[in-house]
Structures are given as C-alpha cells and as structure tokens.
Length: 380
Ligand SMILES: [Zn+2]
Image 1 (cartoon, rainbow, N blue to C red):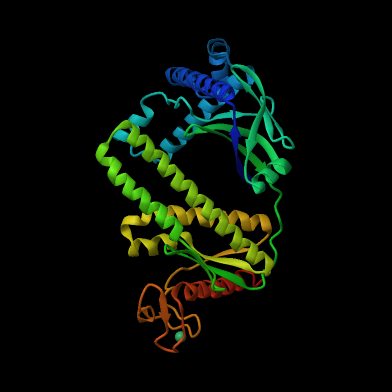
Image 2: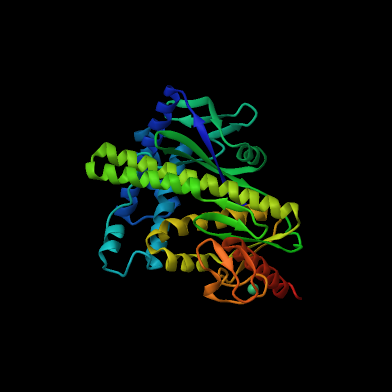
C-alpha cells in the first residue's frame, strides 16, 4: 500500500529564504517549459528535455536533477489536462471552460509544490533533519517534525519522491511510503459504524464520537466570514483563506483520531468494520440537509478513506453495506417504520418496544448487514 506522509519543516529564516528562492525559480522555469511545450505542441518528457533542459539550467540556476523534475512536472500537468479533456471533464469541444483550459499554456503558481528525489534530498531520521538541494547550494541540517505515527512510517518505509510544499508561510515535505500489505484476518463479527453530523461516528457498541467541537469551529468561522466578507479587503480574504485551511486541518485530524480508534477497537476484538456505502451516505444526507451537503459529504468521504487505509494496514476487513432505512429499522425485530424515529436522537420501535439512541440503533443495523453481506460473499 502506498501512502503519503507529511512532515513539517522547521527552517531558520535564512533556510526559509533559500527554500522560497528555490521553489520560485523552479516554478518560473516550469512556466517557461510549459510555454515552449504549448507553442511547439511537444509534451513528451524526452523531446521537451532536448528543447529546454540546458536553457532552464542556465537561466534559473537549477541543478541537473531539479531541471529534470521541472520538465517532468510540466509533462505530468499536460498529461493530466489532456486526460481530462479526453474524458470530457472540462465540457464539450468549444465550450468556454474547455477553451479556457486548453487554449493557453498551463501556468504554475509561484510557490507550487516541487518534487525531489533521493539525489537532491536525503533524510536523517535519527536527527530528524534533511539535506536538500536549493538554489543557494545544498542545505544541510534542515529540521523537521511530525506525529510519532508518521515519523515511524517514514523511517521504516519511505520510498521514491517527496514534494516540497509551501502553505500559509509554512514548509512541508510530502513523502511517499510503501507499506507492505497485511493479510486480512477472517472477522468474527462486525463493528457497525454509523456516520452522521451531530455524532460524526457511532458504533454498534454504543460509542459515540461527537461532532460538537468541529461544529463549534465551523460556527465561529461562519460568523467571522460574515463579518469579513463585508469588508472584502485583500487582508480579509487572506485571513479567511487561512481560517478555512485551519478548519480543514482540524476536521482531518479529528477524522484521523476517530478512524484510528475504530480500527483499533475492531482489531482488538477480532471483528471487521461495516460502513454504509459512501454514495448512500451522500444521498441520505442530501435529503436531510441540502445546504450543508458539500462540506459534510467531503468530510464523510475522508473519514471513510481513513478507516479504509488504516484497516488495510491492520489487516481488518471492511465491508460496505446498503444504507437504505438503517435509521428507521429496528435492530431487534427488524421492523421498518418512519414512526420508529420520533426525533433526531431517539429510536423507539412501534412494534416490539425496543428503545435505543437512534445512531446506535442504526450502527447495529449496519453491523448486522455487514455480517450478512460477508457471509454471502464468503459462502464459497
Ligand atoms: Zn422492534
């Protein structure tokens, strides 16, 4: 399994200036390569290298490897664009959006990410430093930090390229790690997980992961947005952008923590994890809260993805079940009735009298469907 690990760099002011100079030079070079590629309709790395390699080395002070990576970055960007055009993702031929995307050279943000390979970036995991090529020469002793989990993964399994990324004035390396596949253990039952808004995740064991803290952050940011949007100044826009990213990081971190707890619990008890099919979750939420669907469906998707890869790493089976009526069905007698759900929090069966927190009842249905689904698919 291939994962991306992020570490934060801790550069001194001089080191930060050298990193910025390097990324700016690389992206200015990428813009030039892109213009040449576009003008000459030449998008293959090999051909483009012949046309541009010597020039960008000389004009932008790039080392051989850095120049190669710039050319490759441009080729990759055009390959992605051409694939999108071919798949019709940018509209029909002649549409304004398509003409805008295909009618001019691709341009690169001044601080767009720059790839590095092992020849221009080396890691010292014990000292937590990297040595990295810059336009100001090789920079040694650049300190980095990250979560213990990420640093452990990095030290054991890093392979291939890393991207140097600048975000909100902070510097990061995104490194690729190759984790060996763990065989999936045959599950003894399933931990059902209901994903929601008030409770981000509720398990069939009755554990609820509240979304209150996240809702509070989102509420504060919405208020701030209302006030700042009235101003509409450049600094207000910058602040809003930073706040949005901070909110996204908060949500991602919360999703990581929840996913880890769910997978650890399933692993400890020898069970698999049953989740509602993500497409289904989107449908269900859209019916309930049309205005918030985009934000939340994105967050659900992320949590589902985190659970998926953490489970795969732990050898925990994951099964996706049909989400229809999981919140209206009684997990004891199986009766489906919308009157079983008198309010958002309560489930009370009109047939057998069973009562439970609504999300816990839904999670139990999901667990049962997971078990049934697994039995069917593994009957042979
Ligand atoms: Zn019942």
